[in-house]
Image 1 (cartoon, rainbow, N blue to C red):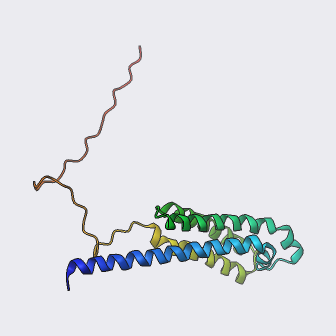
Image 2 (image 1 turned 180 degrees about the vertical axis):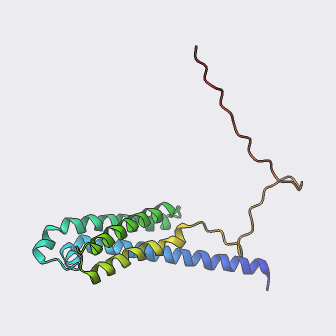
Length: 172
């Protein structure tokens, strides 16, 4: 089999897989945001809170909902317009990591029922782990050739950059 063709096929599959993975992540996050915005009391009730308290805390679900809707649609917009998605991915991972910390702490303190708290913490952790392979650098040693430097046909290593020195300030 032609090695060049094999590498380009592998690159295409990898790029297609990354696009599908990123699209799924963006749609999932936006959908969760829409649900939290449109059904905040029901979302809060999933934590075991009574309806009256859930009604008072609905603003909290809306806050999380608008965040997830913004992150999901931002990620999808970057993908559709062929812009870099890394910032959106890292921002979502940071938000999800904060959710993991808050939910795990609330569960440990008994502020959330153990099963519900564990499920919510696991779901937030899933958001982090789903984005990690997309946010990390994309170099694949088996498919990407190493970067080259045009040396005009000469075979030597480029000199490292020379550090610039600042002149010491003199006082009168």
